[in-house]
Length: 120
Image (cartoon, rainbow, N blue to C red; front, side, top):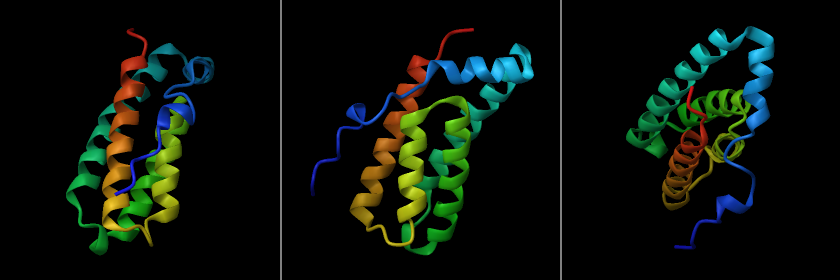
């Protein structure tokens, strides 16, 4: 199997100004609340993706990836959004090994974004 590309060289895990923009739009309390929901839903979504069989649930992978891409982009988690877009676009044709590799990379992007999250 070919090694996974080094996602650290693609884009940052997190765009710091994205959360500030959200705070300006809906206030700090609201932004913190929706960010908490994002982390919870994203964790659950990534777990779900690891439990479903690729061949049987390609349409579900595409929908879940689309939702993840949109929410990650809203909060400025660029690497995670890019990987979710990759899954969304390739879910219909992706093979098992590339699929598992992509999920590993998405988990790593999630962990990197969470590690960069400012403590509030």
